[in-house]
Length: 421
Image (cartoon, rainbow, N blue to C red; front, side, top):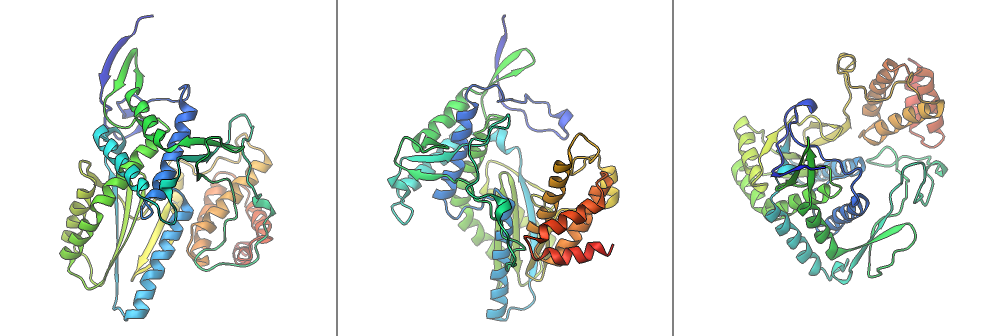
């Protein structure tokens, strides 16, 4: 069967799923899917180990740690220096068309810099002494589990709270590690460090997609749908940030001309979130200048301004240098009109155990992503409202609270608040 061949650059995103006029690549039947996935995960982990001061966040736990650490630093400065009233300013940007616009030259420069940095690391980590990364196998489909948690979450019984976090997550699982052994132990796959770049460009040079009846060879950008796209984006962003941040921070400090300044930076792939704390308020002109200066870090990409009230499902609450946070909840009108429920309906084809698991997971998310019990209570109430709209019985919510109270002492506060409703 004859097919037409051609070449194309990836189209930029349009607003709305139905109007994304670009080929959507599926790696589902790709023969190299699993090996590319292993190299992609190894690449992301390797970058984090080499560039220790990176601003990448890949989990909600890391976001809460960053918020708590930054807030503690501000509190210490206020106590130590008798700092006057502080002003907290949030910024959120999207690296516009990041994945489809990454030049191959820039990606190669990024990996060369990362490998050179690793090759000079003979310190405490001694990354230069290793040739391989052993990556744990992921769960496979069909119910078969290739690796298990070393310790089961259900077996833990915690009866005390911790400062800065409402509960401690005890979920231990196999983690990647450096090695000089080519043969991995059971449950792991061995990835040669130098082969990560080889696999990256093998994927890039053979990114063929089917668009209608025409096969297209992608010329620019990271392959859409590729398991290696995450490591490609991470490598480029980390490289640009490491090159330019010190200069950019100096320019921001010079423009604001303030006696006190602290900056928290977090980036979830192509979503950039900043909190700048100063001892004076920022004018709209100051914010515009900061946007332009930050944008120079990510040249040739542009930064699109987004709503700073929400970042990766968190809603930060900023006041006088204090940072509190909670999950991003919705009002009842939003729940009713959005057409996008946060949970599966209780009347769908799920059993009682799945219903209980859904409720338990929702409760623990509120607990993990809230800075204090008062904020957590508000998040739980909003979550209960959304569950009720999806036909979950309120008594099941209370029952899950009682079950969790056996492990988490703080649940007692919430039980008293909800049983009185």
